[in-house]
Every structure is written in C-alpha cells, then in structure tokens.
Image (cartoon, rainbow, N blue to C red; front, side, top):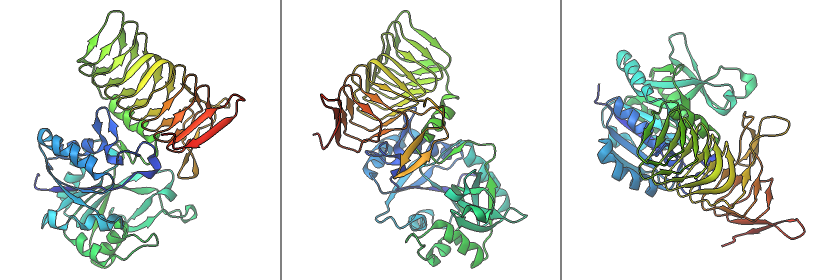
Amino acid sequence: MGFMKAVILAAGEGKRLRPITALKPKPMIPLLGKPLLQYNILGLKEAKIDEILLIVGYRQDKIKKYFENASHYLKVKIEYVTQEQYLGTAHAASYAKDFVKDDDFLMMYGDIFVDPEIFKFLYQKYDKNKYDGLISLIKVNNPQNYGIITLNSNNLVKSIIEKPKPEKSIGNLANAGIFIFNQLIFKAIEKTQKSIRDEYEFTDSMQILINELNGKIIGFTLDNYFWNDIGLPWQLFDANKFLLDRIRKQVFGKIEENVIIQGAVYIGKGTIIKSGSYIQGPCYIGENNLIGPNAFIRPYTTIENNCHIGMSEVKNSIIYSNTSVPHFNYIGDSILCENINLGAGTKISNLRFDNKNIKMNINNKIVDSGRRKLGAIVGPNSQTGINASIMCGKKIGENSIIGAHTLINEDVPPNSLYYQDSNGELKKNSNPF
C-alpha cells in the first residue's frame, strides 16, 4: 500500500451555497479551523496517499495560497492544474493523465466531506480484487437528485443514470464521488461525447469503460461511514456536528473567574473567555476571540478566529472569522460569514409558529431543508443596525447593510441596503457603498 496518487476535483464554485461561497470556493469553506479540502487531504495521507493533484478553477488563488503554506506541515506533495473551461467532470479528470502516469489512482470530488476512514477502506477493497475501477456509493432518499448506479449480483456496475425520473425506480445507490481507476479510464474519457448539459460527464466515461472497453467497475456502499456532499447550506451543520462529536476538551486560551464550561470545548490560543460566560460543549472556539462577559454559547457552535461574542446567545451556529455578535443578539441554527457586524439587539428567528420544516430559496427554487429549526445565512462583509430582525430560512447576500429596526422576511441580494423609513415601509437600494 502506498504507491497510489490522488486527484481531487476542486474547480467548482458551489453556487447553491451562496453567499457562503461568495468570496471562497466550496472546498475552502472552513470547519473547526480547517477548510473542507484539508480534511480530505488528511484522510488520504492516513491511507498512505501523499502525492496529490488538485484540479482548480474558481478562486484558485485562495486554494493555492493556503495549501502552499500548509503542504509543509501536512507532509504531502501537492501539484495544481487549472481547469480553464468548465466542460464537466470527465474534462476535469482528463487533466490527471500526465500526473498519474501508469499508476492506478484515487479520484474524488473536492467538495464532499467524509469520514477519513473511507479512503483506507476503499483502497483495501480495490487492492484485493484488482478491477479496472471502483466507485463508492451512498444510499439516498431522493434518487432524482443524483447519479444513480445499478449493480449486478457480483456488485459490478451495470448502468449509471444521471438524475433519473422517480417513476423509473432504478434503486437508490448514488455516486458518492470517490473512485479508484487504472489507466483504462483515460481511454474511456477520450471516447466521451458531450451530454445534454453540454458537458463531458464522468458518469458517461464510466459507462463507456464498461460497455465499449469491457472494463469492470466494482461498486461499494459506504453504509457505516459519514458522507455529505454539502450541496446545500444547512448540510454544513451535519459536517460540523460530525467533527464536534469527536473533539476533546482543550484550552489554550485564557479563562477568567466565574466562567462555566461543560463538556468537550476547544478554546484556541489568544482567546479570552470573560467572566460570567457559560459554554456548553461540544463547541469549537478558535484563536484570538473575545467571548463575554456573560456570553451564553450552546452546543454545536463553531466560532473561527478573531471574533467577538458579547452578552449574547449563540446556539448550533457557525461563525466565521472577524465577526462581531456583541450586544444582546440571538443567533440560532445560523451561519454568519466573515467580517460581519451585528448591531445591538439583532435577532435571528429559527423556528416557525406552526413548527413546520423551514424552506430556503436555492438558485430560485424553494427547497425544504427537512429541519424544524433553521436560522439565516448572512454573507460576508455585511452589517445590521440596532434591533434588526431576520426571519428563519432567509439569506442576506455579501456586502449588505440592514438598517435599524428593520424586519427581513425575504432574501436580500448582494450589495444591498434594506431599511425601514419613518412610515415603517421597507426601502431597498442596491450598491450602498
């Protein structure tokens, strides 16, 4: 074990996650102080795979800058190729040919979040059986949203159907985005034609490998492992929970008198927890934060670096760096991006009176989150005035300002100023800066 190289497709933008991805690509979304992509790289390294090609595109400078520094202490060798045009997953994979040379290789989508043990498990399964390829599968409840794979009685892939219509009922095994292949896949990619979406689809290449090149691809279902494609903003809470359930209590910062800390809470260096604060783990609080006095931080909260949480309550939320939640704020089941400042008394609702699931507008489609509790997603560089109120399931785009005493009950586009005039009417201006 250990000769294999890995190729990570990390060129995508993550449009459905906006405004979280307004300033950074999806693989660089932080969780507990590390970007998503780093967890995958650490998992590969555990499986003794330490030569990695990153296929980058959208905001690639962010990925390169971070991993050029990090690759030294991660002790992995990282190379980069830019996908100049977004012509689909098979097109992206074709860039790997020179890098992998004659070896078998692992390929994965760079924006999924998985239990790091998966890589070892898949490698061992492939190594034992020597097929032309291996595809990881996950059972899903909504097959129409995924590429669905059917297997024969020997668990070999028969067919791959992108987003099948529900009436087709061809099973619920979806492509989980981690593969192992030998060189034959590149021959299949060369034969791949553009799909209806005008892209070269990797699923089409696999079908060619099977039908035209007589290749065998084994399918393995990841039954007992955590897997999440983080396609929708609230899925970040699931990944956050997976990580927080595994942290240990560690304190590198300073804790004043009369602070209560329960359970597993990580506190980074330079962070000060001021008197009267109450923290219930599991929680992660990064570096150089000022928490309190009298802050109430409830379970499953992650606070990155250089934030200020004052006399406020935060619960099951993700707060990115350089953000202030200073005075009498309530933040529940929400994501606050970087460099946000909340005015005193700003509150975010996270529950409907009728207790029904909260829906969110994703790319102009209303999507049921499946969650009874879901607050707001507030984009980077935004700010609110005093006593602003944001209703559940709403998104505020990047660089926006919400005026004092304003009720937000609709999504706010990026670069907007929303405020209530003296007659209580909502006024909307774009480009406040």
